[in-house]
Image 1 (cartoon, helix red, strand yellow):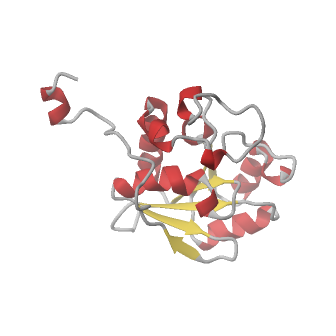
Image 2: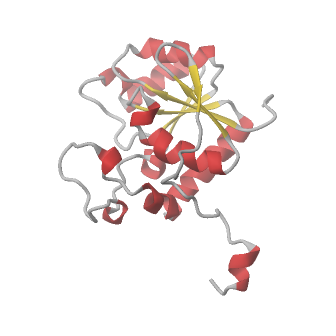
Amino acid sequence: MTDEHTVVYTIGHSNVPAQKIVDLLKAYQIDVLVDVRSTPYSRFAPQFNREPFAETLRGSGITYKYAGEYLGGRPKDPTCYKSGEEPTKNTEYLKLVDYAEVARRPWYQQGIAHLVDIASRQRTAIMCSEEDPHQCHRHHLIAQTLLTMGIIVRHIRGQGTVEEATLEEKTQAEPQPLQMTLFDMGSGQ
């Protein structure tokens, strides 16, 4: 990569034509798209269903990777919800998920480590369905984790502009170290 620091871009597909997202990714020279949707299928935007969209990207020279099982905004673990239960209906997950709890999970940390590895070698974007990053876990969870690690995060918006992500005042995603620190070893943990 030519960037001095690792950069991760984010994008939300909304219900636009798939080619618009491809064009935006190409405009920012994205090599790899990591899909962070818990469920990579949509009745409302079927052009972004996992298999056909992966094929569309391949045809445009962009690699598609799925990581929703690690980095998705709707975790299967009920202890990751403020109520202690996974919601049974389609609802506003942003208000229900305990992002600090998700950030402590080994599967999430594994997903972040894999994302950082990819982004350190290739120009990478993560994708979810919500166009506005401030209404999506890609900002409130993933970007917050990456920012605390010193990684630059840039949100590609639908109109083609880029917004630099910043840490929230009291970030909900306080990541745990990906490996034991010297201090952890000394405390017997």
